[in-house]
Amino acid sequence: MEAYTDFAEVYDTFMGDVPYEEWADFLASLIEAYGVSRPVREPGEVQELEEAPESGYIQGFEEAPESGEVQEFEEVQEEPGVTEEDALISERNLVLDLGCGTGTITELLYEKGYDMIGVDSSEEMLQIALDKKFETGSDILYLCQDMRELELFGNIRAIVSVCDSMNYILEPEDLKKVFELVKEYLAEDGVFIFDLNTVHKYRDLMGECTISENREESSFIWENYFYEDEMVNEYDLTLFIREESDLYRKYEELHYQKAYELEQVKELLLQAGMEFVAAYDAFTHDPVTAESERMYIIARPKRI
Image (tube, rainbow, N blue to C red; front, side):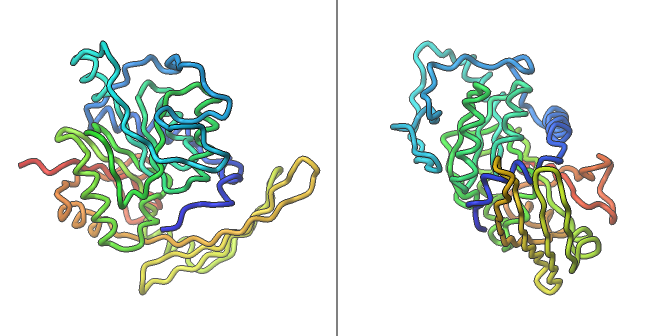
């Protein structure tokens, strides 16, 4: 599972056509339907932050990181005067975005009134998320961690993971480990919502092909290969991003993603002490079918 590096700085440009607002709306509806988290701020309301340093570092860092540098987070002490009721409300409102990338979904859920934590293994992606944080004035906590080694300071009532982050977990045992860690930090009445690209999408729709597209600000070539024996999808991505001088800068990325059958995911959840609740087609929001290209899966800690 490799983190984005140089590609991070153009990721948002490349993903500019993605309907993130619709995704965030659907996530919020699933959290409300299956979880206990509730936004305590009005949508669009931004908490007042203390004076933000120019470089925009996260509260809890010893000093502002240099561009592209994300430092280890130290435990934040409780604020004086916080009542038990305040703490309970804050806990119920807390949502973790696992594999948050540049923080787009994290920011959108924050705008809906949730208190957010974003976790990603790419320092470069998190630096962009930090830049957004101080542009918007949001009070989001970002942590640089591999989700297979997740470490938090307390329980979370809702954990989400989208943009096929889970497909980057190439080994089933590692995916089970992620599920085990989610269970460890998820409250007993909490909910875990994540998406996956389906086997149908990788094998039947993408397979071995080359896709190219010209856009106003960028162009790309996507060379795709699906290895059915390993159920692994490889894509070689070459991007040309237009800069202010009207010259184009070239970026190259090689990515591998694992195709998981829904029944296999259910079994891994069970082995990790979680229980499967539901699965929805990411586009129709109906139950998953053999033709679904991406699915949202809802799970929670197994109830004894």
